[in-house]
Amino acid sequence: MKALRVGICGLGTVAQGVFRVLQDNADIISRRAGREILISVVASRTPKPDVDLGGAVFSTDVFSIPAHPDVDVVVELIGGEDAALRIIESSIEQSKNVVTANKAVIALHGKKLFQSLSSKGLCIGFEGAVAGSVPIVMSLSEALAANEYDLIAGIINGTSNYILTAMAKEGRSFDEALRAAKKLGYAEADPTFDIEGIDAAHKLTILAAMAFDIGFHYEAINTEGISDITLADIKYARQLGYEIKHVGISRRTSDGIEIRVHPALIPLEHLMSRIDGSMNALLVHSNAAGDTLMAGPGAGELPTASAVVGDLIRIARGNISPINIDLGSPGRIVATENITSAYYLRIPSLDKAGVFARVATILSDYDISIEAAIQQEQIKPGKDDQDWVPIVILTHLVQEKLMIDAIRKVQDLPEVIGPITRIRVEQLDQ
Ligand code: HSE
Image (cartoon, rainbow, N blue to C red):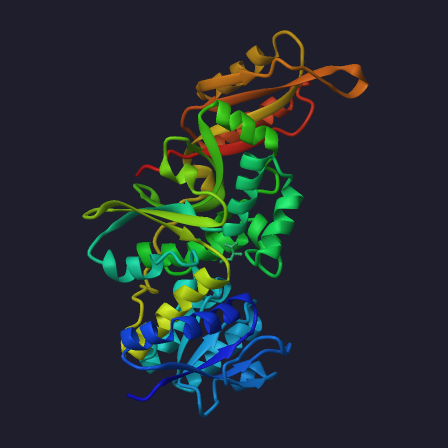
């Protein structure tokens, strides 16, 4: 059989990984694909003379790849949104299948792209777009396709997980850990996408579209990042029996589909709390299979390349059946203020008698019951020589809008001297 000729747009971390995987595992890949997979052309706006292109033709025109006569499949790895979308659309016009690791483009333009792919009988492989080497896309679309899904939850941003782990395990500062994540090639070109939860929200948009047939609704996701998490929060969470992780959660409830991305306290006894570094993990609860948990490297050169090459192997075998996503039936997405969650609160307050009682009274006025509390013994000197202490509270389940109203009232107490930190607590059950 003729070799599958691949044109790659981009020559960054992941693209270099694709070169390496195809070179290092060439024999196994040809055997499994039933034919050779050859990179015929590669284009990058920035030439990288040090990279071994193994005989591929180089161009600086990334837009020339889709129409190139020696390209059967286009691999889009330039990242970003506009140019990547243009490359994918032009590949579809050229009747070429596409592989991408670009979560932003799929999440934000999925509807339009899937409509044009389906009208042309083409496929797009995007396993590398979600959770690096963890095969969640194929699991949802094939291996678990017999199920109704109830819950998809997990750690889907390697950079955030790397930073939180470095803070929790090594006491490193947020900035220092972020610098290391950039150096290791985990972070996006704009790392605010990682630390503010945008990258995870792109990935969750895709997973929720696949699992819950609601279409692509990035705009409906409640998105929070990790930039406000402090070492103190990590320490108090531990004392209460939890680890702080950044998670994406989409869940079927009687009110509709919840879809949200935020830091959360995860019980120390849950396996998810032990997923460290750049590892990602996804828990899927479905009605026949039960709970399945998949974990693996969620970012970086070779793990993402592994997923990209996996998609190429599928295409080389002739399996171009599209990933089934129902674009036409938007489900009811639950407004975040209506979700129910338990909460961790850290309230910086003056060290005066009766403050805790006043906070507890406000919470009780809103029917919020306290599960656990820590009042730090060690007193910190504050402004104007007044001593202050953080009051840390773990609540039972409460509707989010009540929690927000209660926090507003607590914040107005004269003894509360700084912003209250609020982090959801997740048991990760259905
Ligand atoms: N910046 C992403 C992450 C890369 O840290 O997870 C993989 O999508």
